[in-house]
Length: 136
Image (tube, rainbow, N blue to C red; front, side):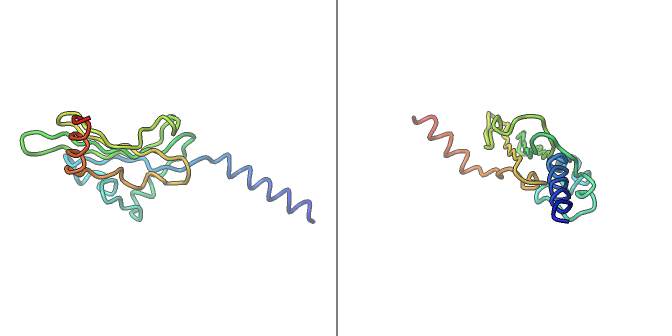
């Protein structure tokens, strides 16, 4: 009896490791705010659409956010996906060049870890980083 219970436990552990990571796979843009609106910020993990966007992943879950500024407005996009990138190659930070800004968050430590939005944009932080970079 002990042997069969141990075998069953070992089989279960093997099956769990074979399944891999689960990630959300969706995208949102303020250009078409009704399309995949659950994927925006804040992310609505309880929505039926979010539950149907879950995919198996043998790599890294990624959440990325980008913003392009123009003539007093901006276009913003958020993507949550699975990638074959190694998590160690991910920047896990925000950056900007001119009128383009973006953030990236990668994770492989828990199922659905890309539900959190990458760090939100804060103009004061971006200006501080630019001033410090230029000053030194």
